[in-house]
Image (cartoon, rainbow, N blue to C red):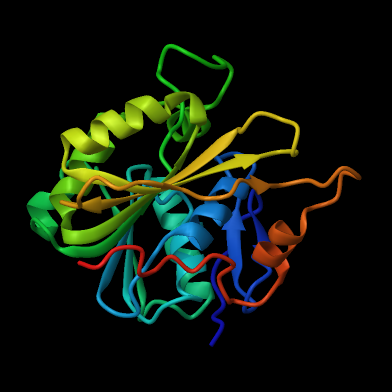
Length: 260
């Protein structure tokens, strides 16, 4: 059931193209992009239990995950403005019974939620170290893109603390940092199990990587076929069309990639 919520002049409501979901966005803060959508489709999530989305932003990943599971979903966001937008989007879509948005620091969440409290974790973290990138970004955009409030090690440590043994942790990031991701994941008992590179075109280098790790898993990683975004004619590839506009069936079902 959809609900009426306040939409401010500097905000817009966008269609998420699935199950009539809508989301509140603003050009003044960092809006979601394709990486969040791909992560929400890639992640292995349970049909019940508790799911946590770190660095949730305006709540796009919890909203998309709600189409795939009846599990309880939480998102945590350190920026008050984004967390408040996410809560209104959840309310607008009538999902307050399934999705809860926390405002807070992911590094401290284990103190409140408890160790090993979640059955799956997703995260689309800031990609760039604080010394790189544009200096003209406003504070909201800077925090979304740069590791100002958390870095990769903070994310890995938080995921290790919050995931139960055997839980899956799924992340989207930049391929340039894959070595660092794998090293930190293993340092914090998150064993990489699935890796998939995303290429803008078949003849182009990957510009995103999707990675899924298992808390306390055994070493055994699989490299999935590459995901190509655009065909030679510049149109979305069939798989991207399926992800954005197709049925809710997953193109690659890897929900049982390892026996626990």
